[in-house]
Image (cartoon, rainbow, N blue to C red; front, top):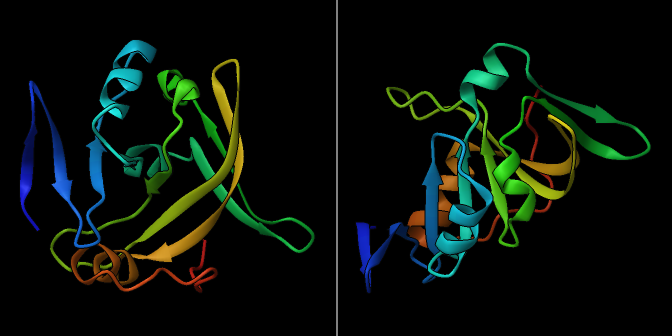
Length: 143
């Protein structure tokens, strides 16, 4: 898996084995920048570890609705995003362990984003990105 893939005057952060181009983002972007980057990327991986650690990103399982989340002080620029998004909540680079939330729907309400998603382990994400092993529809991740 290569990094920094040139695409004309832009780039994608990495190319997945399946051919998808991922944009990995560690900071908020303005809506115009999100739209511009989506012209050259197929999906977003948003680094939400700080928000999760400081309880600004809450994720829980609801028996009726599945996995839900609330992200306070969410990155408002992503309200215009059309591409799939994955929220990195706990990845520990040294061990490779952690969890991600694949966003299935979200709405932005003022400074907050509310939504639903499918949890995935870091190992499952790595297998998908490196070896094109499909993500299961529901993996066991403890929030």
